[in-house]
Length: 163
Image 1 (cartoon, one colour):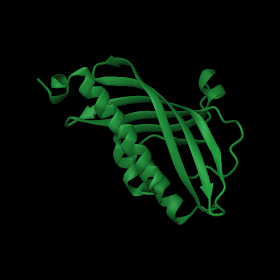
Image 2 (cartoon, helix red, strand yellow):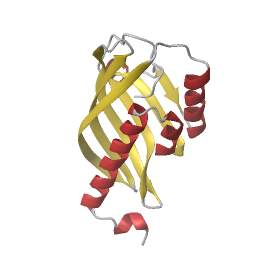
Image 3 (cartoon, helix red, strand yellow):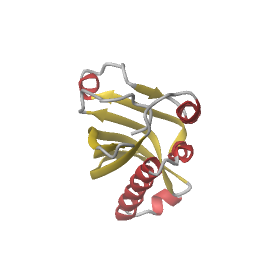
């Protein structure tokens, strides 16, 4: 029997919630070099509009299809992109395990991201939902896929930091 099979449903929910909590604190605390470690090697990370998602259109603002691409994204963020300094604060709620098939958990959560710039002004930057596929590796949850389906149609600045 695998470690995953010995986990009860409440423990699975707790571990998935902890994954989300640690994920958002990693981004909000600007520890982006740690961000790819929340994902499997063969992961998908996509930031896509609600309309494109609903119509099954592939166009996304950000599309990474491996952990290596996530690391490249962080490297570009640190070394190549030019953008106004800012801070994020995420609120993630209403996480729901929708399904489980062959050890892959389908999870949906709502999110809102606030952005504060150096002038001290804070605004709602982005809202939407995470649609995740989560697997357990050595008893720890990892994101196999995270679709960030955003509702916000007017993103007020360059989207460089993961959501």
